[in-house]
Amino acid sequence: MQYNLVKRAREKGHFVIVSDYYLDAPAKAICNYGELASTFDVEATILVAKKHNVDGIMTLGTDQPVYTAASVAKVLSLPALIDVDIAKAATNKKVMKRIFTENNIPTVRYKIIEKSFSEKEISDIRFPVVVKPLDSQGQRGVYKLDHVSDIRTVFDNVLSFSREKEILLEEYYQSQEITLSGWVENSIVHILTITDRISYQSFPHIGICTAHHFPSKHFNDYGVEIIDIANQIVEAFHIKNGPIYFQMLIGEKGIKVNEIACRIGGAYEDEFIPFITGVDILDMLIESSIGNKIDSRSLYNYSIYHNKKYLSVEMIFAKPGMIIKMNDMNEIRKLPGIVQAKYNVKEGYELKAIENATARAGFMIITGINEKSLQDNIRHAYSKLYILDKKDENLIIDFKVRKEADV
Image 1 (cartoon, one colour):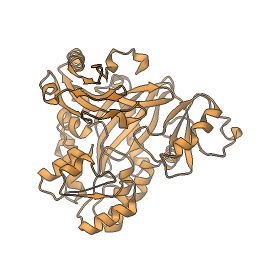
Image 2: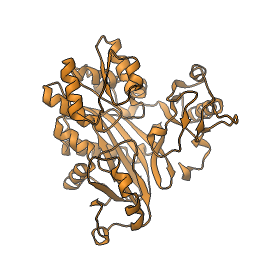
Image 3: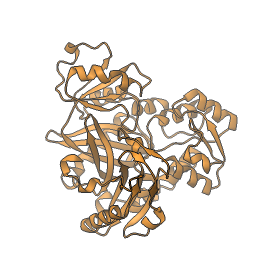
Image 4: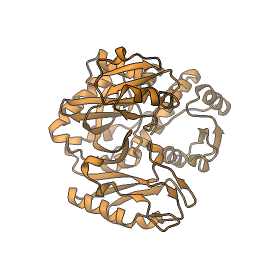
């Protein structure tokens, strides 16, 4: 997700330093200078920022670096859209859930538990349940479980994705999910997109996103309430400026807020939101990060109620296996309705079992003139897409051919 951000910043003439704990992080191939420092490591990132005397710091697409960026900005007195307290609340589910509760923002029943928890502590929580790390991302360490013994079995694994000693325990809510993306300027909320977040359930792993679909099928019935809740969240968390990305669940008991983030989404929103709204949130993020005043006219000229476009972001997943041959994405990009298509993997790469969002093999952004046209273009694209193993088997998983209950 960071690649496009670095590319755009370079195109705008900025000198860009990429901080990441991988030597071969993709954006390091196009930046001016790369540093070996984890985006989770605040102190190491501060040292990098001081070393290069940076004028700004930015991130998108993943949760935890939001807190790191805010912390670095505070120490170095750099421009920042949100302060450290807001960043903490938006990246730590213990703080986040407390604010939900204190401000009557609807969310599922939950507990924060330690490894030594007793059954009495969670006696008011109904099974099945979902457990999550308090401070991770990309569905890492997230499980749907049926018994107390299951919680104890996976506890250490959940903690392995966290810096905390506790985990989040929630009642499982049978629901469909939507995501809301927007931009806040001077406490005014501008809603840009509300999408259906289609996810893959492979028990005990849940919530792995396979697609974002615009417009949401829930917009006509729930749009006003979704937007009202978004405004409540912005007020409760004291968000004054910058991007927002909220995930909500819609089921028999209405809307429940799953989690929130103060960032551009991780489903290539930096590419598809400008395409269907005319609001270049990526450029706004870059300009804001160095303290420049953004041109916000496009925010006020846009209304989600008047947006009649159809678009889907398709996350490409594949079965486990060694990649021997795969598509030339230049050919896929020539297909009807394809806005963008890229692989995250290459020939010779060993695909692993799907456990979280890191298993994405690539993505396609697809549009259509109406719902039928969009679905036709999606099916056509998948029919042409292939990742072959040594047995010449196509490893691509086409979630569109699965039953609705499976996705």
